[in-house]
Length: 128
Image (cartoon, rainbow, N blue to C red; front, side, top):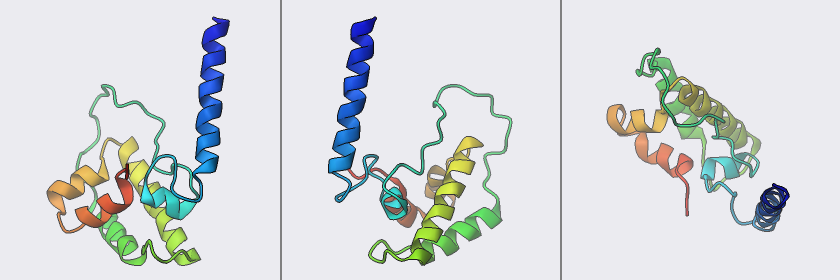
């Protein structure tokens, strides 16, 4: 048991050190959106992808799509100012909220809003 705990701690230390060393290049998670915010993963929901009852609608509200569209118009990865960071933070919150309600926004956009999908994927898909 002690060996397992020591291995877990050393693996965690290696990840923390590697994330610190790579902080100037990219985030540990690989999302461009997270890089725009603060270099830690802002899209993680903390929930497993296991089975859950589907008690909520899979449709994303039109006002959510409109807000995402407006945020994507503001977010320019080449510009790292406060306006872009605020829009990135808001987009990450929306992505997490929709994921927690079993409505993955990127998957929805790929099917229902194909013009949004490339810009959303560029920000929210891991770059590795």
